[in-house]
View 1: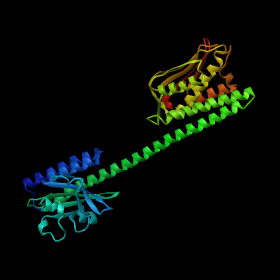
View 2 (view 1 turned 90 degrees about the horizontal axis):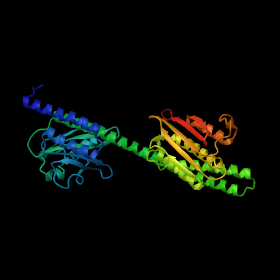
View 3 (view 1 turned 90 degrees about the vertical axis):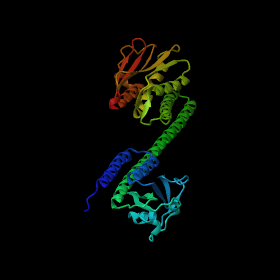
Length: 382
C-alpha cells in the first residue's frame, strides 16, 4: 500500500472530521431540506469540489430532481431534473446501487453527460446512492470543472454522507408517519367525545320529555335527577373534546364551565366557583364532574327550603399532587346525628360515596353551619 503524503493525510483527516460532525447534525435534524442542503455544502468542502447536489428519485417520472445543491446557477435547485436511466451517471448509481466515478466526462463512453452538467462545464463527477430500509431515496453527487481524480477513498467519504442521510430520512419519515397516526388518533378521540356529548344530550332530552308526560311526582323527580346526571356527563365530554391536551383537563376552567351549566338550571341560587389553574388527569374528569353535579344539585334541593342561597364549589391545591375539592352551602345543614356511612341507603349518598371511591379520594362531611362535603384527591396516584 502506498504511503500517504502529509497533504493527502491532512485531506483525509479533514474528510473524517467533516463526516463525524455531520453525523451529529443528522441525528438531531428535524428539517430534511435543511439537512440535505447542509450535506451538499459539507460534501463540496470535504471533496474540494465546485459543485455538489442531492437528487430525489421521482418514480412516476423516472427522473431525479435536484432538491439541494451548492455551486449551481439559478433555477437549478428545486427545478432541474436528471435522467434516472442507466445511461445517466446518477441514474446508473440509482438503478444498480453501485457508486459511479467519471473522471473524464468528455471521453465517457458508458454514459451521456446530462445537459445540466454540460451547461456548467462539468468534467468529472462522483455519484453514490442514498438508501435506507424504506428503499432508494436518490443520489448524492459531487462535480467539478477542473482536471483531477476522484478515487476509492472519495467514494468512502461520499458513501458515509449518503448513509447518514439515508438513516436521517428514514427516521424523519417514520416520525412523520407516527405523528400523523397520533394526530389521527387525537382527531378520532375528539370526534368520539363530541358524538358522545351529542348522544347524551339526546338522552337527557328524552328523559325530560318522559318526566313531563309522567303524572307520578316521585317518578318525575327520579327522571329529573337522571337527566341532571346525564347532562353532567355530556358537559364533561363537551369539555374533553375542546381541551388542547386530551390527557389532561385544566381544573379551573373545567369546574367553572360545569358551574355555569348548573347556574342555568337554578337561576335563583348564587353558585360560585373558585379553583386553581392546574391540570388533572382526563380519566378523573367524568367522576369529578358527576361528584360536583350531585352535591350542587343536592344543595339546591335541600339546603334552602324557604328560599335561595349561595352554593360554593372550591378547589385548593394542598401540595404538588394533592387537591381538596369541596361543595358547601349556608343552609339548614345536615340532620342532627347525620351519619355519612349510614346515609348510604339513599341514592344520592350512594352515588357520592361511589364516586369518592372511584376518584380514590378521602371524603369528609361537616354540617354545623350549612353543609360541606370535601374530597381530598391524590393526583399522583390517579
